[in-house]
Length: 321
Image (cartoon, rainbow, N blue to C red; front, side, top):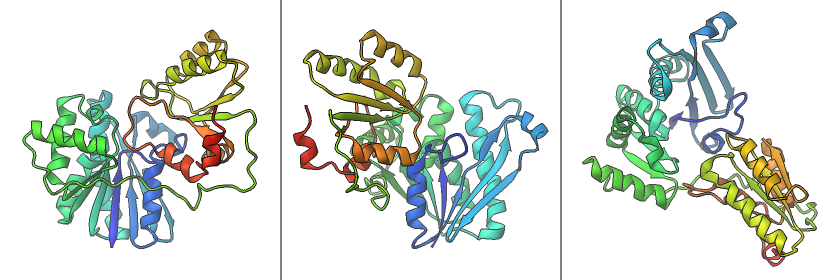
Protein backbone atom coordinates (compact mmCIF):
# COMPACT_ATOMS: atom_id res chain seq x y z
CA UNK A 1 0.00 0.00 0.00
CA UNK A 2 0.90 3.65 -0.32
CA UNK A 3 0.65 5.10 3.21
CA UNK A 4 0.67 8.85 3.72
CA UNK A 5 1.70 9.76 7.29
CA UNK A 6 0.65 13.18 8.62
CA UNK A 7 2.25 13.70 12.06
CA UNK A 8 1.79 16.56 14.49
CA UNK A 9 5.44 16.14 15.52
CA UNK A 10 8.41 14.81 13.57
CA UNK A 11 12.20 15.05 13.97
CA UNK A 12 13.75 18.14 12.41
CA UNK A 13 16.92 20.19 12.70
CA UNK A 14 17.14 21.46 16.25
CA UNK A 15 14.42 19.02 17.42
CA UNK A 16 15.95 15.69 16.47
CA UNK A 17 13.97 13.68 19.06
CA UNK A 18 10.57 15.39 18.59
CA UNK A 19 8.09 12.74 17.48
CA UNK A 20 10.85 10.22 16.87
CA UNK A 21 8.37 7.44 17.71
CA UNK A 22 6.45 8.46 14.58
CA UNK A 23 9.64 8.20 12.53
CA UNK A 24 10.27 4.74 13.99
CA UNK A 25 6.84 3.54 12.93
CA UNK A 26 7.19 5.06 9.46
CA UNK A 27 10.52 3.29 8.98
CA UNK A 28 9.07 -0.03 10.11
CA UNK A 29 6.05 0.39 7.79
CA UNK A 30 8.34 1.22 4.87
CA UNK A 31 9.78 -2.30 5.01
CA UNK A 32 6.45 -3.58 3.66
CA UNK A 33 4.76 -0.51 2.15
CA UNK A 34 5.49 2.67 0.22
CA UNK A 35 5.42 5.37 2.93
CA UNK A 36 5.49 9.15 2.62
CA UNK A 37 5.61 11.54 5.59
CA UNK A 38 4.16 15.02 5.09
CA UNK A 39 5.26 17.44 7.81
CA UNK A 40 4.96 21.19 7.12
CA UNK A 41 7.41 23.66 8.62
CA UNK A 42 5.48 26.71 9.86
CA UNK A 43 7.54 29.88 9.59
CA UNK A 44 7.15 33.61 10.14
CA UNK A 45 7.07 35.77 6.99
CA UNK A 46 10.59 37.03 7.81
CA UNK A 47 12.06 33.78 6.42
CA UNK A 48 11.41 35.21 2.97
CA UNK A 49 14.57 37.25 3.48
CA UNK A 50 16.61 34.14 4.36
CA UNK A 51 15.96 32.27 1.14
CA UNK A 52 14.32 29.33 2.89
CA UNK A 53 13.31 26.48 0.56
CA UNK A 54 9.56 26.11 0.07
CA UNK A 55 9.74 22.36 -0.53
CA UNK A 56 12.28 19.89 0.90
CA UNK A 57 12.06 16.16 0.13
CA UNK A 58 14.24 13.33 1.43
CA UNK A 59 13.92 9.75 0.20
CA UNK A 60 15.33 6.42 1.42
CA UNK A 61 14.16 3.25 -0.35
CA UNK A 62 10.39 3.25 0.26
CA UNK A 63 10.29 6.14 2.74
CA UNK A 64 9.80 9.72 1.53
CA UNK A 65 9.75 12.72 3.89
CA UNK A 66 8.32 15.96 2.46
CA UNK A 67 8.62 19.22 4.39
CA UNK A 68 6.75 22.10 2.73
CA UNK A 69 7.34 25.52 4.24
CA UNK A 70 4.15 27.44 5.04
CA UNK A 71 4.08 31.05 6.20
CA UNK A 72 1.88 32.29 9.02
CA UNK A 73 -0.68 34.81 7.87
CA UNK A 74 -0.80 38.13 9.76
CA UNK A 75 -3.85 36.92 11.67
CA UNK A 76 -2.25 33.55 12.55
CA UNK A 77 -1.29 34.43 16.11
CA UNK A 78 -0.65 32.05 19.00
CA UNK A 79 -1.14 28.30 19.00
CA UNK A 80 -4.39 28.43 17.03
CA UNK A 81 -2.60 30.41 14.34
CA UNK A 82 0.06 27.70 14.17
CA UNK A 83 -2.61 25.03 13.77
CA UNK A 84 -4.29 26.98 10.95
CA UNK A 85 -0.99 27.41 9.10
CA UNK A 86 -0.11 23.73 9.61
CA UNK A 87 -3.44 22.63 8.13
CA UNK A 88 -2.92 24.87 5.10
CA UNK A 89 0.57 23.39 4.67
CA UNK A 90 -0.75 19.82 4.68
CA UNK A 91 -3.55 20.58 2.23
CA UNK A 92 -1.34 22.33 -0.30
CA UNK A 93 1.64 20.05 0.29
CA UNK A 94 -0.39 16.88 -0.32
CA UNK A 95 -1.29 18.09 -3.81
CA UNK A 96 2.36 18.76 -4.65
CA UNK A 97 3.47 15.42 -3.18
CA UNK A 98 0.92 13.46 -5.22
CA UNK A 99 2.49 14.68 -8.47
CA UNK A 100 5.67 12.70 -7.79
CA UNK A 101 4.71 10.10 -5.18
CA UNK A 102 1.13 9.34 -6.22
CA UNK A 103 -2.20 9.10 -4.47
CA UNK A 104 -2.29 7.32 -1.10
CA UNK A 105 -4.29 4.20 -0.29
CA UNK A 106 -4.61 5.27 3.34
CA UNK A 107 -3.81 8.41 5.34
CA UNK A 108 -2.36 7.83 8.81
CA UNK A 109 -2.40 10.86 11.13
CA UNK A 110 -0.62 11.11 14.47
CA UNK A 111 -2.38 13.24 17.13
CA UNK A 112 -5.74 14.86 16.44
CA UNK A 113 -4.39 18.42 16.61
CA UNK A 114 -2.88 19.36 14.24
CA UNK A 115 -2.07 16.22 12.22
CA UNK A 116 -5.49 14.57 12.41
CA UNK A 117 -7.32 17.79 11.71
CA UNK A 118 -5.18 18.48 8.64
CA UNK A 119 -5.31 14.90 7.37
CA UNK A 120 -9.13 14.88 7.17
CA UNK A 121 -9.20 17.03 4.05
CA UNK A 122 -6.48 14.94 2.38
CA UNK A 123 -8.29 11.66 3.05
CA UNK A 124 -11.57 13.15 1.87
CA UNK A 125 -10.10 14.49 -1.38
CA UNK A 126 -8.33 11.18 -2.12
CA UNK A 127 -11.44 9.20 -1.05
CA UNK A 128 -9.34 6.91 1.17
CA UNK A 129 -9.63 5.84 4.84
CA UNK A 130 -8.13 7.92 7.64
CA UNK A 131 -6.39 6.21 10.57
CA UNK A 132 -5.69 8.32 13.66
CA UNK A 133 -3.08 7.42 16.28
CA UNK A 134 -3.39 9.48 19.48
CA UNK A 135 -0.30 10.02 21.64
CA UNK A 136 -1.41 13.01 23.75
CA UNK A 137 -0.87 12.81 27.49
CA UNK A 138 -3.32 13.82 28.78
CA UNK A 139 -5.79 13.94 25.89
CA UNK A 140 -7.26 17.12 27.41
CA UNK A 141 -4.03 18.91 26.44
CA UNK A 142 -5.46 19.02 22.90
CA UNK A 143 -8.71 20.64 24.04
CA UNK A 144 -7.62 24.08 25.25
CA UNK A 145 -9.70 26.18 22.81
CA UNK A 146 -13.00 25.74 20.99
CA UNK A 147 -11.06 25.79 17.72
CA UNK A 148 -8.96 22.85 18.93
CA UNK A 149 -12.08 21.00 20.06
CA UNK A 150 -13.64 21.43 16.61
CA UNK A 151 -10.46 20.03 15.06
CA UNK A 152 -10.53 17.05 17.42
CA UNK A 153 -14.22 16.47 16.67
CA UNK A 154 -13.52 16.49 12.94
CA UNK A 155 -10.65 14.00 13.30
CA UNK A 156 -12.63 11.64 15.55
CA UNK A 157 -15.69 11.75 13.30
CA UNK A 158 -13.66 11.18 10.13
CA UNK A 159 -11.25 8.45 11.27
CA UNK A 160 -12.10 4.93 10.14
CA UNK A 161 -9.86 3.62 12.93
CA UNK A 162 -8.69 5.38 16.13
CA UNK A 163 -5.54 3.99 17.76
CA UNK A 164 -4.75 5.37 21.23
CA UNK A 165 -1.28 4.20 22.31
CA UNK A 166 -2.45 3.22 25.79
CA UNK A 167 -5.48 2.42 27.90
CA UNK A 168 -5.50 5.81 29.64
CA UNK A 169 -5.81 7.86 26.42
CA UNK A 170 -8.38 5.32 25.22
CA UNK A 171 -10.56 6.04 28.27
CA UNK A 172 -10.04 9.80 27.91
CA UNK A 173 -11.03 9.74 24.22
CA UNK A 174 -14.16 7.71 24.98
CA UNK A 175 -15.18 10.15 27.72
CA UNK A 176 -14.61 13.17 25.49
CA UNK A 177 -16.37 11.59 22.50
CA UNK A 178 -19.42 10.80 24.63
CA UNK A 179 -19.55 14.42 25.87
CA UNK A 180 -19.56 15.66 22.26
CA UNK A 181 -22.04 13.11 20.91
CA UNK A 182 -19.40 11.30 18.81
CA UNK A 183 -19.83 7.54 18.39
CA UNK A 184 -16.44 5.79 18.46
CA UNK A 185 -17.89 2.33 19.13
CA UNK A 186 -16.14 -0.30 17.03
CA UNK A 187 -13.57 2.17 15.70
CA UNK A 188 -11.07 2.19 18.55
CA UNK A 189 -8.18 -0.16 19.33
CA UNK A 190 -5.20 0.31 21.63
CA UNK A 191 -1.91 -0.02 19.74
CA UNK A 192 1.30 0.94 21.49
CA UNK A 193 4.31 2.70 20.01
CA UNK A 194 7.00 0.88 18.07
CA UNK A 195 10.09 -0.04 20.10
CA UNK A 196 13.16 -0.46 17.91
CA UNK A 197 14.64 -3.58 19.46
CA UNK A 198 17.03 -3.73 16.50
CA UNK A 199 18.59 -0.55 17.96
CA UNK A 200 17.75 -0.65 21.66
CA UNK A 201 19.09 -3.94 22.98
CA UNK A 202 21.24 -5.50 25.67
CA UNK A 203 24.94 -4.73 25.31
CA UNK A 204 27.20 -7.54 26.46
CA UNK A 205 30.09 -5.08 26.74
CA UNK A 206 28.26 -2.65 29.03
CA UNK A 207 29.84 -2.28 32.46
CA UNK A 208 27.51 -2.56 35.44
CA UNK A 209 27.36 0.76 37.25
CA UNK A 210 28.90 0.93 40.72
CA UNK A 211 27.57 2.59 42.78
CA UNK A 212 24.06 2.10 41.34
CA UNK A 213 23.24 4.60 38.58
CA UNK A 214 19.68 5.82 38.15
CA UNK A 215 18.75 7.50 34.87
CA UNK A 216 15.77 9.53 33.74
CA UNK A 217 15.34 10.81 30.18
CA UNK A 218 12.59 13.34 29.56
CA UNK A 219 11.59 16.87 28.72
CA UNK A 220 12.08 18.95 31.86
CA UNK A 221 8.45 20.04 32.10
CA UNK A 222 5.80 19.95 34.85
CA UNK A 223 4.32 16.72 33.46
CA UNK A 224 7.54 14.81 34.14
CA UNK A 225 7.69 15.88 37.83
CA UNK A 226 11.47 15.70 38.13
CA UNK A 227 11.14 17.72 41.36
CA UNK A 228 9.63 14.69 43.09
CA UNK A 229 12.48 12.55 41.77
CA UNK A 230 15.02 14.96 43.28
CA UNK A 231 13.25 14.90 46.65
CA UNK A 232 13.23 11.09 46.54
CA UNK A 233 16.96 11.19 45.84
CA UNK A 234 17.44 13.37 48.94
CA UNK A 235 15.57 10.79 51.05
CA UNK A 236 17.76 8.03 49.63
CA UNK A 237 20.90 10.01 50.36
CA UNK A 238 19.74 10.62 53.94
CA UNK A 239 19.70 6.85 54.39
CA UNK A 240 23.40 6.88 53.46
CA UNK A 241 22.86 4.90 50.28
CA UNK A 242 25.51 5.25 47.61
CA UNK A 243 24.12 6.04 44.16
CA UNK A 244 24.27 8.42 41.23
CA UNK A 245 21.39 10.11 39.43
CA UNK A 246 21.64 11.30 35.82
CA UNK A 247 18.88 13.53 34.45
CA UNK A 248 18.91 13.62 30.66
CA UNK A 249 16.93 16.19 28.71
CA UNK A 250 16.16 19.89 28.58
CA UNK A 251 13.06 21.99 28.93
CA UNK A 252 11.35 24.99 30.53
CA UNK A 253 12.07 23.86 34.12
CA UNK A 254 15.79 23.16 33.65
CA UNK A 255 17.02 26.17 35.63
CA UNK A 256 14.44 25.70 38.39
CA UNK A 257 15.30 22.02 38.79
CA UNK A 258 19.02 22.70 38.90
CA UNK A 259 18.34 25.24 41.63
CA UNK A 260 16.31 22.66 43.58
CA UNK A 261 19.15 20.17 43.18
CA UNK A 262 21.57 22.63 44.81
CA UNK A 263 19.04 23.48 47.52
CA UNK A 264 18.66 19.79 48.40
CA UNK A 265 22.43 19.30 48.51
CA UNK A 266 22.52 16.73 45.70
CA UNK A 267 25.41 18.22 43.75
CA UNK A 268 27.75 15.33 44.53
CA UNK A 269 25.39 12.60 43.30
CA UNK A 270 23.19 14.27 40.64
CA UNK A 271 24.20 15.18 37.06
CA UNK A 272 22.12 17.20 34.59
CA UNK A 273 23.29 15.76 31.28
CA UNK A 274 21.27 18.13 29.07
CA UNK A 275 19.75 17.17 25.74
CA UNK A 276 21.18 13.86 24.59
CA UNK A 277 21.35 12.30 21.15
CA UNK A 278 19.61 9.00 20.55
CA UNK A 279 22.96 7.20 20.58
CA UNK A 280 23.82 8.77 23.93
CA UNK A 281 20.45 7.69 25.33
CA UNK A 282 21.03 4.13 24.16
CA UNK A 283 24.50 3.96 25.74
CA UNK A 284 23.19 5.37 29.01
CA UNK A 285 20.28 2.91 29.06
CA UNK A 286 22.62 -0.01 28.46
CA UNK A 287 24.88 0.89 31.37
CA UNK A 288 22.51 2.27 34.02
CA UNK A 289 21.16 0.25 36.94
CA UNK A 290 17.60 1.38 36.33
CA UNK A 291 15.57 3.95 34.44
CA UNK A 292 13.28 6.04 36.64
CA UNK A 293 10.04 7.57 35.40
CA UNK A 294 8.49 10.18 37.70
CA UNK A 295 5.86 11.43 35.23
CA UNK A 296 2.48 12.54 36.48
CA UNK A 297 0.95 10.94 33.37
CA UNK A 298 2.19 9.15 30.24
CA UNK A 299 0.25 7.88 27.26
CA UNK A 300 2.78 5.10 26.59
CA UNK A 301 6.17 5.76 28.20
CA UNK A 302 8.52 5.02 25.30
CA UNK A 303 11.66 5.57 27.41
CA UNK A 304 10.53 2.85 29.82
CA UNK A 305 9.98 0.38 26.97
CA UNK A 306 13.36 1.23 25.44
CA UNK A 307 15.01 0.74 28.85
CA UNK A 308 13.44 -2.70 29.12
CA UNK A 309 14.78 -3.57 25.68
CA UNK A 310 18.24 -2.47 26.80
CA UNK A 311 18.34 -4.88 29.72
CA UNK A 312 15.71 -4.57 32.42
CA UNK A 313 16.85 -7.94 33.78
CA UNK A 314 16.39 -9.56 37.17
CA UNK A 315 20.03 -8.92 38.07
CA UNK A 316 19.36 -5.23 37.68
CA UNK A 317 16.40 -5.42 40.03
CA UNK A 318 18.52 -7.26 42.62
CA UNK A 319 21.05 -4.42 42.62
CA UNK A 320 18.52 -1.70 43.24
CA UNK A 321 18.99 -0.02 46.65
